Image (cartoon, rainbow, N blue to C red; front, side, top):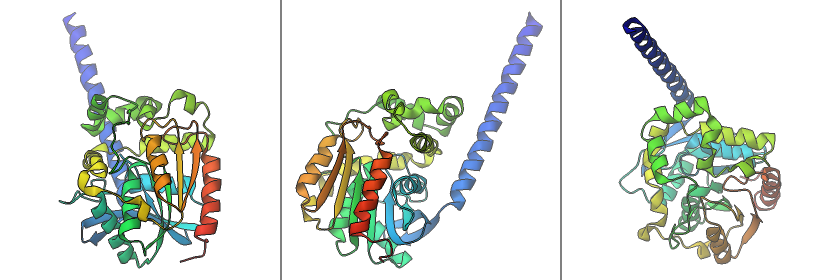
Length: 319
């Protein structure tokens, strides 16, 4: 019995070692891939990481909570026509963009302007999703001469609104447990990646209506959470969007705006889209009864509407 117990212990230790080595190998690969996927520029607000691709008129693709330039790339590739150049920055606190002393959405908008200065871009369209929407709105009000059009998906709350209506799809303690270190998230991604779908409001009923491309998009969004420890500062800073000193004045926006939101979104309340549409005289609105935060089941419609909107507001060859 004693020998059997020792053998079990040895096997358990070897299994744990093998698992740890597997984890370390995967994380090195993830970090190496991300390191070569982006560049960094210095702005008045500090370093700002970004990825870039495509050809044509420029579009700033601004990611949501838990993202980074890699998530911004996914948004651009999922929703933009091929005839546009996308630039996907990491917002404050996300990979490659450290959290500055002033991490407000207004300061983030100014950092985007600094990025455009470094790239030699005078005017740009903004494609923003969820937590990327408040700094996009700030950019359009603080730098109106540089904003050409706005495309706003699944809008997160921002001041003067509050997040009181927000009903998170999973408990906060689960977010805290998953984001404490990279290992729990890595293990779930290896064992059962779709078990993390609720973090993105991708309920089973919504998954059932996904196309193959949407399923790939969901899986890529889930995988892009790693390394989560390099996104934690950004996640903790998402409350800056509803801080009293960061009020957005959407009624001042005069450029073409397209708002797209699902009424059953459990992460970003639909009331934000309704409020914003009522404030912006130039806003067009596309809503869905279902679809959740990721607009599942409607990506083809969303892409077509965005292409039509851009074709009118920002012709492909415009600079």
